[in-house]
Image (cartoon, rainbow, N blue to C red; front, side):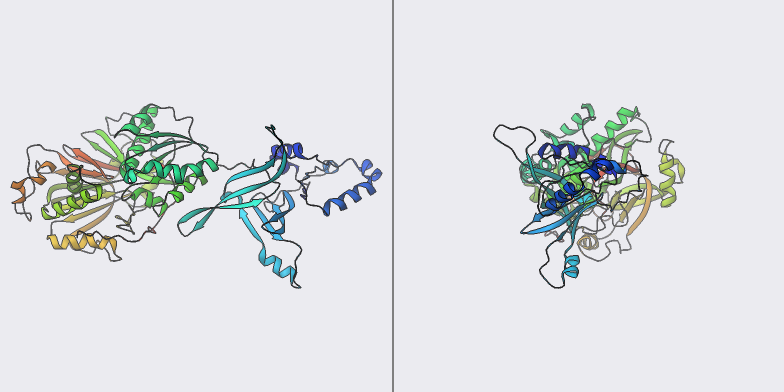
Length: 566
């Protein structure tokens, strides 16, 4: 039996819809006036004794006699509804407060009853509940109402970095509790060729059932080509959604993130053919990992697991992240999280030229081929260092106030570089559990600039191997790291990634001669996507420009994977 405190009418009013639902199944017993109390005192006393001896549907009451009294200040731990439930095979005293549901076993069977019962008290925080299902008994043909049998609470539980669903079966509660900041309608993009061409099956088996359980409506689009999600996001109405979800790898995530941010600039009237200050995306982005590395998903989930990612979305866990903009000749090329030039760009470019090969073989082939033909890039590198929190605060205050690059002075380096990485997020993955850029965070308002100077092939391979170990991968004399907020990179030779596979260049002295070609385009690896840039590239960081469903992780809970080819 439920007992309502009846002293906090404002709290009970918040559950008015639940009370109406309960009144459909069993009459409510309101208290009368004081005169009526005196007239029926014995009768009501007998009724209360009968109610205490039975387990029935909840009877909520309102105390009319207390209306004239000043209302007491409400406490979060004050019971809203209380009752007796059978959980498992035992009866429990269950209490609902504003923040949690608590249950303790009744009718103790040991001499140390009070002490044992206190130890056995259990509870679930309402903020960890992502779905509530009402159980009713209805007659044949009955569409609404019915006898309320009870409910099941579905809880999101932590097990390390993993999130798991857990069902708690109770009776006589309402499913009308309001959960703030949790999505109810999502736009979902699925890349069908991700996850060994089983991304859609992954969505149907592991993601969709949880969305359905949480009463989330999902508008699913299976992308048919590269750029399909981008074209939809530029034109569709976003007002009907509470978030956007991408089921795919890093390339798919980058396309959807770019689409969300580009749409925000279009809606705000920003001129993307100039150096501008972008506005934040209107909707948060959820990432269901279905790729080969999934560095963005690992950076906000700490693990490559579809159920964990789905529960982060359902629970409304939100993490603001910094985003880079990539511009050339005053025109925005795209938004992204990370970029690599030199070895990282050439390896991806070579892999893209052999897409007829299976993905894993293609990546290993490109890595071995690029290492065998290892050559430096002759570059002019300029950057503005970040002063940490001061720069971040200033950037946030002046989000609409002009070019971030004008706040500091440029430092310039010229020379030969084997690889240059610029990353706004740590880029956690199984190959680098501590991240490709462990010296940055998701939203610290800066980027990590990592430059690998010209060195021998053997020393460069030692550097690569350290990413999967606990040793410092930057502990070499030929590596520099900087915390920056803007980077400009201008190749000083007319290089072309297309010449990477030419026999002539394979015969060149890899220690001193950069690749030269007449095509004059340079391969950049932007979030695992190939971007060909004809000239200087400007990269700027924009604090907390995008919100992802997830949390800030320091290390991936993934078994370290070492590349078998080096």
